[in-house]
Image (cartoon, rainbow, N blue to C red; front, side, top):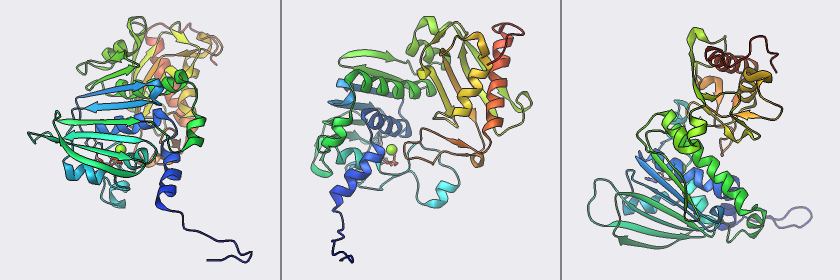
Amino acid sequence: TTTPEGTDIRQLDEDTVARIAAGEVVERPASAVKELLENSLDADADSVDVTVEAGGTELIRVADDGYGMSEADLRTAVRQHTTSKIAGLEDLESGVATLGFRGEALHTIGSVSKLTIRSRPREADGAGTELVYEGGDVVSVEPTGCPAGTVVEVTDLFYNTPARRKFLKTTATEFAHVNRVVTRYALANPDVAVSLTHDGREVFATTGQGDLQAAVLSVYGREVASAMIPVEADGDELPVGPLESVSGLVSHPETNRSSREYLATYVNGRAVSADAVREGIMGAYGTQLGGDRYPFVVLFLDVPGEAVDVNVHPRKREVRFDDDDAVRRQVDAAVESALLEHGLLRSGAPRG
Ligand code: ADP
Ligand code: MG
């Protein structure tokens, strides 16, 4: 095709298209970790071990004991837009129970890295399969001895997209993002044993047998765990608004940090951040926290599907509510009544 100026309009080749799309989904090591961790949880794993080296830039390994994949499943899984989780738009409209459904994570991660997947279905005995995928192509598929479940290894992330590789921050910063992601999922899934290891050092490991309090203890340690109080509000206990319930744990005001990092908030089970939610939390603490100090919070909000759009962004980190003001008031009220009940708010203290 030729434009009036005589410029050629070209069809981009598949590799280029895949690498551009990958940039949307996989921005940094932490985004690959998130996708792999979600796949493990969707696979009904009881344990997920995340290992990274150099902040995830050299190696990301996610090993689970989930339902695994057969050789045929594996070959299909790395192709674009292949998913076992939804069949069509109808399923999206009726609400998705799984964390993934786009069927693009493995394909896109594999188009910007070297990907090795070893998997064996739970019910199959004998060998599993190892598939090696590099820059978007299947390099080899071979039988291999492995336990039931799946191990995905990503090495040399962005080796073929130098612009994106250059955009990566220091190892410490990239690891902080990875830590944040794994922490979010570990806290939301106390019934799954989640561990995180960085450069050979175990950062945390949850038991998979406890409740939220136990997960907080494993992830943040004793000092923080002992400063947490429960929040539990639903129905009439909440002001009018879209939220059906607000529950979780929040810290005593004096157990705080100078970073928002420790505000772990979830909407319908997904780890997301929303300004209205953060403002509601901060409003409840009022002036009890010094300027620029944030509490430890693990808070789960339940909203009917129609009041929130979680599909706004492929990375699904932010959600949009129809009525932000009402959400802010509801979160504020739920957290405030928990703090009051535990005598943790000075009465009459001005609220921020
Ligand atoms: P999505 O999660 O959106 O379906 P992905 O590209 O992340 O897309 O994964 C493609 C498919 O590969 C999944 O639908 C699932 O069937 C399979 N899969 C991926 N990871 C795992 C895993 N850890 N255990 C079992 N199956 C997996
Ligand atoms: Mg997925």
